[in-house]
Amino acid sequence: MADKTEMIAIWTQVVEMAKKAAVAPAMYRALDASVPIAWEGNVFAVGIESTDGLLNGTLKSNDSQLKIEQALRHITGNRELKLKVLDSPTLEAWNSVKAGEVALAKMQQQQQDRLNANPTAVADTATWDDVYERLNRLWTSYDYRTMASGKGRFMVDALAMIDEAIDQLGTAGGDQSERAFSRTLERVGSMVGSEPALIGYLLFERRRLAGK
Picture 1 (cartoon, rainbow, N blue to C red):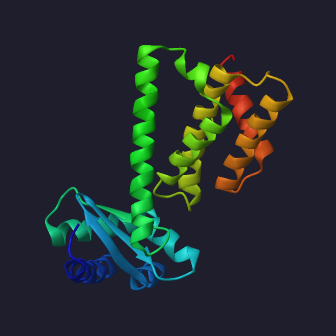
Picture 2: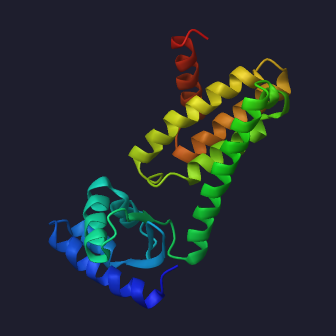
């Protein structure tokens, strides 16, 4: 990981260059409240020293990300460098994001390995709690999950994951199974700030259109 002093020097230049690239007062305020947290490989992570969630969302917008990444790449000379905006300005938040991404990748690989070895293995061992864990890791891996656009993209993948789980686990296992399935919908609803019944409707409509 890069030295803190080096990161601060780079980020100071990035902030000035990004401000010159756009007339956007909201982005200016977000940049002024931002601090560099980590630079590892092709990822430069920053956080916002403010409780104003709008500032965090501003830095995560597509337009802001584009301008900031252009400045980052110009100043560092790394054409692959990407910006990661954390939900809090701490090294612990960065480590949590990394751990979530590693766990998600590991889980996906393990699941794929089991499917390759035995297509019924997941259905034999998975539970709705396992599905929730997968959904939770998927949620933490999204860069723009505090924004409507990020929540929408998550919903697409989440519905696909739950749809697959229904094929494997079913929902006809009695009261306990139905309750576990409903809890999964409620948990997704809490993640995206939506009514669980609406998520259920979208899921069943997806399955109806697919002929399931």
